[in-house]
Length: 484
Image 1 (spheres, rainbow, N blue to C red):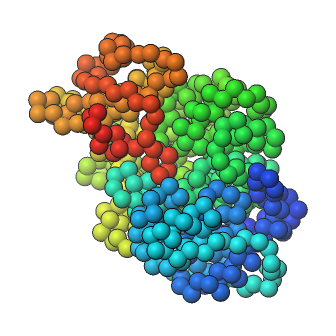
Image 2 (image 1 turned 180 degrees about the vertical axis):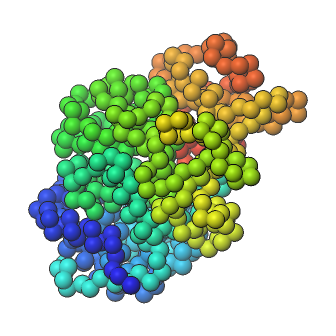
Image 3 (image 1 turned 180 degrees about the horizontal axis):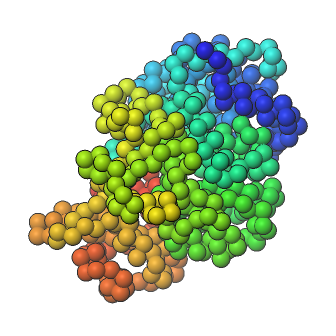
């Protein structure tokens, strides 16, 4: 077996650009040469401390995350990246499932881990050894990383990804975007997030580009970093874009080259406001952890409004019906993907893996269709489709309508059982600051845009949308609330 292909690419970048800043933090930066020394040094320490095949990493967004992650790979370990927002009992269960006894962490999370009886080690990412002093070890399992799903439909699952999975996704992104070593990435997504790890960390560091890693998402500071470091790539969730749009901090945004919203539906109002605020288009991409994670994307000069773009060039995307037949252009069905970025499987759950991957094709459970030009349009999760009085309704359509109403900042629509109509729609609405709207006003506005059966029967105004571990709207929390 060969040594890590990801590390080979990283070392090639370090050889080409030894003095270029690889990671730029809030108060200091790390050159490629220095980062390589740190990675090797971490590998030596991990080899001395961790006898097993897997290392668990619980770390916030800091410049130290990358050398710890890559150092674990250098030591031949599988890296289980634990979500920092998970409660301690869940973290303990996740670590147990991966067979890990020791968690590498920072001081922020040490008390939480100790409180539930877990062993922890404060990660040391300093440079102590030279790369040629630390031989790279072989990962015999073939699993490079374990990343966790968002948990929107149950407890988060550990997704096993190989190096081939991750590098295929990186290569597909490069082909689709033209991303190269001249880019400056801003890493504002949690680094335990598949987008945060693959797109905002490994993509730049295996290319020779730079990545700016702010430790906190403070809108004013984020905007200042874009200006100061001439950031060209910004990948975030719609909620983060919402707050950036609202912050009045003046900046020169002319360096922006690629701005993508992922993880959940991008409201049209957010895309329009971003364009107005920064004079640059915000486009929507689509992906899932099980696909390493990016599935579809189109650059600004070849994008179709309302779509999530075209599939990456190195995957095969089909729309399939209930009998797994491939549907024609324009027909609505399940989004299915095959290709080198399809995960190895769910750790320790062969049944769930077999249900998800059938005949080499991963079934995403997302509903959508392809148009004549190959653009993918999403309608929602398969289990989101509901029938109201016998008519099919996708909550995303109702949410888009609500968010087009002046004064509505964000909306989430949930279907509850109803004996007479089969289901009743209930909308949870977050208003813009200072806005005053009533359910009567919202219902009247909906009548101008939606068929009667699509209009929510109830409205609940909430101060803030709840979020999952990965920043998505937490509809399970909303459904469990007494307001429903």
